[in-house]
Image (cartoon, rainbow, N blue to C red):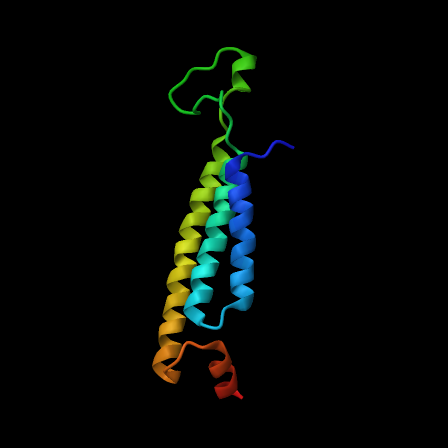
Length: 118
């Protein structure tokens, strides 16, 4: 399997963010690591879909069957745009929840929030 630098970087970011999610004590850090996790997944899928000698799917006329194979598939890019929009919505919801938790409990520490809820 021939991985590019982008895929290695995306995999490294993925595992760093997983470790950060597991080890973070503050809720805001958890949100940041979740955002990094989502970004690394998008970067990985876009890195997999990259090819050097590929034509854009818009603005060309394909007359030969061999040229069809050289046209980029727009579906992965459209799905990744959708994933970016969803990650922004998830970030907004997470920040809203954290703001309401901070207003109620005056802390964003997970251990304090767990002990107060018992």
